[in-house]
Length: 73
Image (cartoon, rainbow, N blue to C red):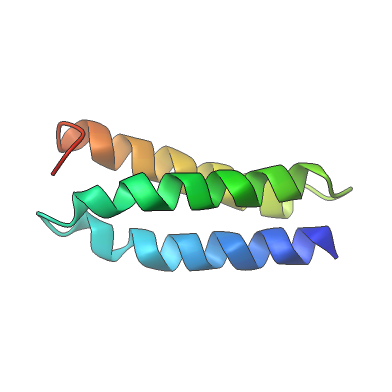
């Protein structure tokens, strides 16, 4: 059950991360990364790893986008 919750959080975070690639919307990653971190934490409590891996992927995507934009934009 925790894996399903983690996957749902990861999907929501990924859906919010897609528009954050548009210029001047990169600040949204500051909200997406903590959301995905919560999902990864919930995924770590599960026996399965798919939810955790999805959230870790979203975190990496958000961090790379922040690095490309200088951390703010």
